[in-house]
Length: 409
Picture 1 (cartoon, helix red, strand yellow):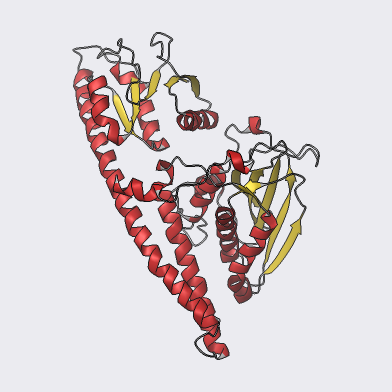
Picture 2 (tube, one colour; picture 1 turned 90 degrees about the vertical axis):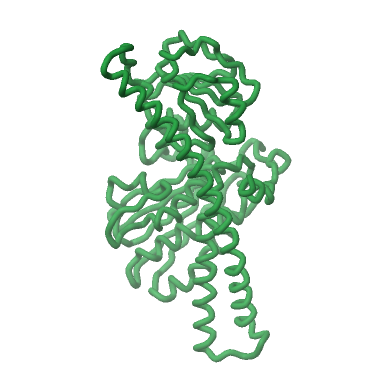
């Protein structure tokens, strides 16, 4: 058990740590927006640094290894002036869970007596901490470079898709059936490349953009139907039968249509890719009761449905008749860069499902996968607005220039 105290005024940071604590019962988290009492018995103290933050003066060299600071890169100079102690840990924001986990494991270890042989080990460790900080800076530079490259990559793809549409509309002359079929396939592949580029861009810079979605009341069924149109070449080529079962939601759904379409297209492309010829893909949409308190470490964080009246989310299941996902990977397939060997790898190279998780998470929903007797089911939950909590007035529009500003930083 690790007792952890977070000092933060940032709700996103609090949500990040609280989400980790829910998934890892070994972490006992307490949160404060003031100066932490370093005598409260916590193993680790995490400070969400911002200029002007009141930092306890009682952090001596022997206690420094128990203190981690989340710092924006632009605030590093101000941080070093406020906290001159070399032994504290520094993690650049946005913080990734694997990096934080490594720091927590080290900080939770008992301190070694001064002058012992292990003291040399601690000196080496402090050198590694400083090297890790430099690596984090280089990683952010690499990520920003990749984001700029992918952003530039999307422009010619958009133009190519537009030219395909121009030709398919026969505005430049009539087409033979064979020519039209080739252009349809070109257009489908171009759009797929464009979606992959968008996914790479969002995974590269998405966590650094603390912007809100542009949520609007929408027709989720329309998004599903649009996604089905996008994957029509795949279903037609393999002779896949699509079964559709839909129960209208009893309350308003607020979401960003383009993002939800991207999620549904990714899930349907994944299903079609692994469904054998003349197989079946089933899509179901229905109201559902989600007990958020049951999350824990369970792969499926939902309780049994309690009927239409108690439903607080809308659930979509995409079931295919393809091979199942190896059980150890059912949770990992939604993580960035996650892959597993073999021809049954459903991760999409760590892009498709990772972007689905990112989008659904920003909508305050949940996505997961299960194996069934005749295939695999990918399910998602989207909160319903039964009490008018997500009206457009409460939802700020995403600033489309934020990414450019970030990349220039």
